Image 1 (spheres, rainbow over the protein chains, first blue to last red):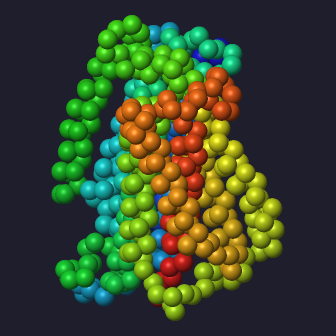
Image 2: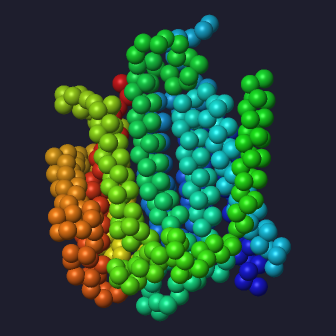
Image 3: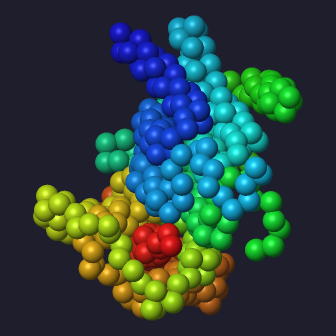
Length: 93
Length: 123
Length: 237
C-alpha cells in the first residue's frame, strides 16, 4: 500500500515540475515567472528528500528558494517589469 | 513490481531531461535578458536532479551513521554524487548573482533590457 | 523559422541524452563488491566509520577526501562577491534611501523577534555538521536569510562592511592554515590526523573536520550577506 502512495506522489511532483517550468518561460509578467522559478526549487527540494539525500535538500531549500528569488526581484525592481517594454533609446521606428 | 519501478524511473529521468530542454529553449529563443537568466537557472535545476537520481539505490537509506544503524554500510545510497551536487548548487547561485548585476548595469546605460534594442557596441 | 530549427536541435539533443541514460537503470546497485580494488564509494563509506569517526559520510567526503574542491568553491564565492561589488560601484555621496515608504509595524516587530532565533538555528546547523545533515553551506545560507529579514524591514539597519571583511578574511586564513599545518607535520595537505579523533556520535570527533566546517560556515554567511547588502543598496536613477 505504501509503495502505491510513494509512486503516486513522485508522478504528481514530476508533472508539477514540468508544468511550473513551462509557466515560467511562457509568462510575460516577469514577477510571476520568478515566483514560478521559486516553486521549481521548492518541489525539487522535496524530491531530493524522497531520493534519500538530506544534505542536498537542505542546501537547495536554503539557497534556491530564498536567495535566488530575492536576487531576481531586486533586479526586476531596477529594470523593467514586463517583457515587451519598449522605452529604449534605440527604437527602430 | 516491475511496472512500478518503470513508472518511477520514467518520471524522474523524464522530468530532469524535460527541465534541461525547456531551459535550453528559453536561452536560445527569448529576447529579454532576465528571461535568459531564468532559463539558465532552470537548466541548473534539471542537471542537479539528474545527478542525484543516478546515485539512488532501491531500498536504500540516507548515508548517515546514526546511533541505531552503525553496521548497515551495504544498504546506503551512493554518497559521491551528493557531495558533487552540494558544491554545484552554491556555484550556480554565485553565477546567477553576477549575471543579474551585469543586467542592472546595462539597464542604467541603455534604458532597455532587450537584446534586440541594444544596437550600439560601445559601452 | 528560427524556432523550427531550435526545436529540431532540442529534439536531437533530447533523443541522444535519453538513449544514453537508458544504459544506467534507475535504482540498480552499482556500488558492487566492497573488497574490490578501485571501489571508490565503498572505500569512502568504510573508512569514514573506522578511521575518521565521523557520522555524516557526505560531510567527510566534502571536507576531508575532496577538501581541495571545497577550497576552490570558497574561492569562487569570494570572487563573485568582489566582482559584484566592483560592478555596482557607487560613491559615498550617492547613497539614497532603500525603501520607498516605511514598512508596517507587523513586519518590524516580527523581524526583531525572529532575527536572533534564525541566527541561532544557523549556528546550530553548522556546528553539528558532522553528526546530522547540515554543515557550513547550509548554516551560512540560513544566517544570510536572517540578515536579509532585518535589511528589508528597517530603513536604518546597516551591516558594517569592514566587519564582514574581517570575518571573511579570518575564516579563510583558518582554513588554509589548517591545511598547511597538515603539510608541516609530515603528511599531506588537509590531512586529518593531527588532532584526536574522539568517539563516534559525540560533538568532539573527527579531528579537524568540525573546525574547518565552522570556518566555512562563517565565511559563507559573511559573503552571502555582503552580496545581498550590495544588491539592496542600488537604486535605479
